[in-house]
Length: 162
Image: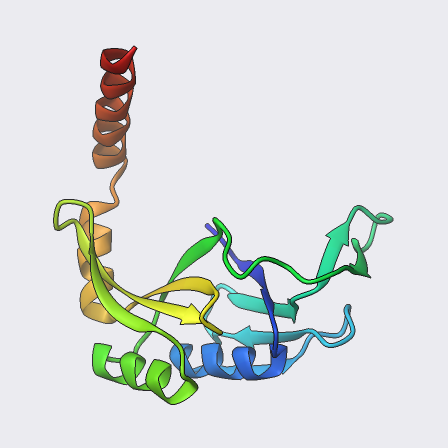
Protein backbone atom coordinates (compact mmCIF):
# COMPACT_ATOMS: atom_id res chain seq x y z
CA UNK A 1 0.00 0.00 0.00
CA UNK A 2 1.30 3.44 -0.83
CA UNK A 3 0.77 6.01 1.89
CA UNK A 4 2.40 9.01 0.22
CA UNK A 5 4.35 10.02 -2.84
CA UNK A 6 6.05 13.15 -4.13
CA UNK A 7 5.95 14.71 -7.57
CA UNK A 8 7.90 17.54 -9.18
CA UNK A 9 5.79 20.60 -10.05
CA UNK A 10 6.31 24.10 -11.35
CA UNK A 11 3.69 25.47 -8.94
CA UNK A 12 3.60 23.23 -5.84
CA UNK A 13 0.83 25.16 -4.07
CA UNK A 14 -1.53 25.18 -7.06
CA UNK A 15 -0.97 21.49 -7.77
CA UNK A 16 -1.43 20.51 -4.11
CA UNK A 17 -4.66 22.49 -3.89
CA UNK A 18 -5.98 20.91 -7.11
CA UNK A 19 -5.10 17.36 -6.05
CA UNK A 20 -6.69 17.99 -2.65
CA UNK A 21 -9.85 19.09 -4.47
CA UNK A 22 -9.86 15.86 -6.51
CA UNK A 23 -9.69 13.92 -3.22
CA UNK A 24 -12.09 16.11 -1.26
CA UNK A 25 -9.21 16.81 1.13
CA UNK A 26 -7.07 19.87 1.84
CA UNK A 27 -3.68 21.36 0.96
CA UNK A 28 -0.97 22.78 3.20
CA UNK A 29 2.70 23.75 3.06
CA UNK A 30 5.08 20.81 3.52
CA UNK A 31 7.62 22.04 6.02
CA UNK A 32 10.70 19.85 5.49
CA UNK A 33 11.47 21.51 2.15
CA UNK A 34 11.19 25.16 1.17
CA UNK A 35 8.50 25.75 -1.42
CA UNK A 36 6.98 22.27 -1.04
CA UNK A 37 3.27 21.65 -0.45
CA UNK A 38 1.15 18.59 0.25
CA UNK A 39 -2.29 17.43 -0.85
CA UNK A 40 -3.92 15.61 2.05
CA UNK A 41 -6.66 13.12 1.18
CA UNK A 42 -8.13 13.19 4.68
CA UNK A 43 -8.63 9.43 4.65
CA UNK A 44 -7.95 6.86 7.37
CA UNK A 45 -4.59 5.90 5.79
CA UNK A 46 -2.89 9.30 5.98
CA UNK A 47 -2.63 9.49 2.19
CA UNK A 48 -0.78 12.52 0.83
CA UNK A 49 0.99 13.65 -2.33
CA UNK A 50 3.88 15.99 -1.67
CA UNK A 51 4.43 18.56 -4.42
CA UNK A 52 8.03 19.75 -4.75
CA UNK A 53 9.52 22.52 -6.87
CA UNK A 54 10.35 20.94 -10.22
CA UNK A 55 14.07 21.68 -9.94
CA UNK A 56 14.47 20.13 -6.47
CA UNK A 57 16.15 16.76 -6.07
CA UNK A 58 16.42 14.51 -3.03
CA UNK A 59 19.68 12.84 -2.06
CA UNK A 60 20.53 10.65 0.94
CA UNK A 61 20.84 12.65 4.13
CA UNK A 62 21.17 11.90 7.81
CA UNK A 63 18.92 9.56 9.74
CA UNK A 64 15.98 12.02 9.74
CA UNK A 65 15.45 13.55 6.30
CA UNK A 66 16.94 13.33 2.82
CA UNK A 67 18.80 16.40 1.63
CA UNK A 68 17.10 18.71 -0.84
CA UNK A 69 19.14 20.48 -3.48
CA UNK A 70 18.24 22.67 -6.43
CA UNK A 71 19.30 21.57 -9.91
CA UNK A 72 18.72 22.76 -13.44
CA UNK A 73 15.39 22.20 -15.13
CA UNK A 74 13.87 18.73 -15.50
CA UNK A 75 12.46 17.08 -18.62
CA UNK A 76 8.77 17.71 -19.28
CA UNK A 77 7.83 14.03 -19.03
CA UNK A 78 9.05 11.00 -17.10
CA UNK A 79 8.16 7.36 -16.61
CA UNK A 80 6.49 8.18 -13.29
CA UNK A 81 2.77 7.97 -12.74
CA UNK A 82 0.31 6.86 -10.07
CA UNK A 83 -3.36 6.02 -9.80
CA UNK A 84 -5.48 7.64 -7.10
CA UNK A 85 -9.06 7.23 -5.96
CA UNK A 86 -11.47 10.15 -6.02
CA UNK A 87 -15.02 10.51 -4.71
CA UNK A 88 -15.79 12.83 -7.64
CA UNK A 89 -17.60 11.93 -10.85
CA UNK A 90 -15.79 11.71 -14.17
CA UNK A 91 -17.42 14.96 -15.25
CA UNK A 92 -16.18 16.75 -12.12
CA UNK A 93 -12.61 15.51 -12.60
CA UNK A 94 -12.65 16.49 -16.28
CA UNK A 95 -13.95 19.96 -15.33
CA UNK A 96 -11.07 20.41 -12.87
CA UNK A 97 -8.60 19.51 -15.61
CA UNK A 98 -10.23 21.93 -18.01
CA UNK A 99 -10.26 24.72 -15.42
CA UNK A 100 -6.54 24.22 -14.72
CA UNK A 101 -5.67 24.00 -18.42
CA UNK A 102 -4.35 20.45 -17.96
CA UNK A 103 -4.99 17.54 -20.30
CA UNK A 104 -7.73 15.33 -18.84
CA UNK A 105 -9.03 12.39 -20.85
CA UNK A 106 -10.94 9.20 -20.05
CA UNK A 107 -9.03 6.09 -21.13
CA UNK A 108 -9.43 2.33 -20.96
CA UNK A 109 -6.50 0.27 -19.71
CA UNK A 110 -5.59 -3.11 -21.13
CA UNK A 111 -8.19 -5.25 -22.81
CA UNK A 112 -11.07 -3.30 -21.22
CA UNK A 113 -9.67 -4.09 -17.74
CA UNK A 114 -10.65 -0.75 -16.19
CA UNK A 115 -11.08 2.94 -17.03
CA UNK A 116 -9.13 5.90 -15.68
CA UNK A 117 -9.08 9.62 -16.22
CA UNK A 118 -5.58 10.69 -17.23
CA UNK A 119 -5.05 13.99 -15.44
CA UNK A 120 -1.75 15.42 -16.66
CA UNK A 121 -0.59 17.65 -13.80
CA UNK A 122 0.81 20.85 -15.35
CA UNK A 123 0.66 18.92 -18.65
CA UNK A 124 3.71 17.00 -17.48
CA UNK A 125 3.08 14.41 -14.75
CA UNK A 126 0.45 11.68 -15.15
CA UNK A 127 -2.01 11.01 -12.34
CA UNK A 128 -4.65 8.41 -13.15
CA UNK A 129 -7.83 9.40 -11.32
CA UNK A 130 -10.35 6.67 -10.58
CA UNK A 131 -13.95 7.65 -9.82
CA UNK A 132 -15.98 5.31 -7.57
CA UNK A 133 -17.21 3.42 -10.68
CA UNK A 134 -13.64 3.09 -11.98
CA UNK A 135 -12.38 1.98 -8.57
CA UNK A 136 -14.85 -0.91 -8.65
CA UNK A 137 -13.58 -1.90 -12.11
CA UNK A 138 -9.97 -1.68 -10.95
CA UNK A 139 -10.54 -3.73 -7.79
CA UNK A 140 -12.38 -6.41 -9.79
CA UNK A 141 -9.38 -6.61 -12.14
CA UNK A 142 -6.44 -6.06 -9.76
CA UNK A 143 -6.33 -9.44 -8.07
CA UNK A 144 -3.21 -11.49 -7.39
CA UNK A 145 -4.57 -14.19 -9.71
CA UNK A 146 -4.99 -11.76 -12.62
CA UNK A 147 -1.51 -10.30 -12.07
CA UNK A 148 -0.01 -13.81 -11.99
CA UNK A 149 -1.76 -14.62 -15.26
CA UNK A 150 -0.50 -11.40 -16.88
CA UNK A 151 3.03 -12.11 -15.63
CA UNK A 152 2.89 -15.63 -17.07
CA UNK A 153 1.69 -14.28 -20.43
CA UNK A 154 4.48 -11.66 -20.44
CA UNK A 155 7.08 -14.33 -19.60
CA UNK A 156 5.79 -16.58 -22.38
CA UNK A 157 6.02 -13.67 -24.84
CA UNK A 158 9.64 -12.99 -23.84
CA UNK A 159 10.58 -16.67 -24.27
CA UNK A 160 8.80 -16.85 -27.65
CA UNK A 161 10.64 -13.72 -28.85
CA UNK A 162 14.08 -15.16 -28.03
